[in-house]
Image (tube, rainbow, N blue to C red; front, side):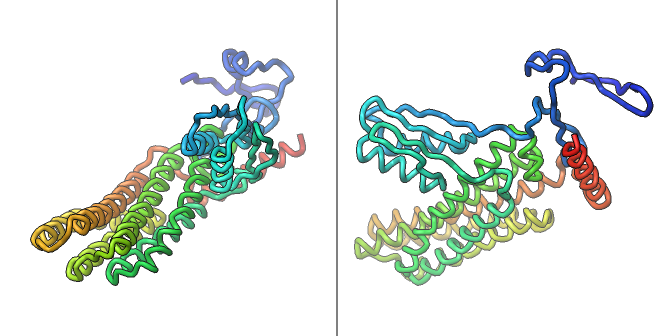
Length: 363
């Protein structure tokens, strides 16, 4: 770490010199401007230039005739998650119908707009301002959808209600769309101090939120997996025995409750509740073994029914594991090394931030 001493310059002015290697790295010289951003922990981030935020970035993706539908979507999503605001897809040959559909599907999935399209290229762009988005709101919305999916999944499981199962299945895309948006914000904030400051995040927050978002998305995936098994069984005119349906629904409700409480404990910073959630994980595992025992004890179950029961049992087990993971993150957050500003210090920090902003405007 490069340490610098504060020195006096004139009457009442205090200055700190900037390292020569940093000036050379950013191509700065005498008379150039730099920007200062006040962080939540009262540290200052110095950015080269007068702009506080990075300009919008664009990337070009070259598509070959043999590139598949799935490959194109994965590459567009990767560019989106890495903060590019514009993506231009080009091909030396024509973009075939399947490739055009893949580009439009990805654009819709990521809330991007098609700005220009020809037979050999498509330009898609995101029009939203990342600094105006809110990570907390996005995560809470994700949780609301995932929690409703888990709740309705257990109802459809208990009653073997495939109509409700199909509704749950249709909601998975909504969770995926929100997860892409939040992960994009977090990845951008981790590399852009100005954006992180706008969003009220530090680097540890970005890491914790990213894990949280993945666990919420994975929980929704497990609910989708359960209802998919019910839909497949109905199509094959097969059914899980009522006794096992009731037992699995009961265990599933416990896992669902663990997940819901884990999210609430995360935002409430409740260590005691988080500890209780982690302890319940072993009980879910024990009940999972009970489901397996009763499944194989019934020799009348077909191979398809047995496979579906095992898949559903595994999905419920994973829900509980994800809830325990979220609870562990909540505990870890309570012992972060980076200081958090609370109470009077937070008010003073807000005043200091406003003062800096006014100074910059006057300058």
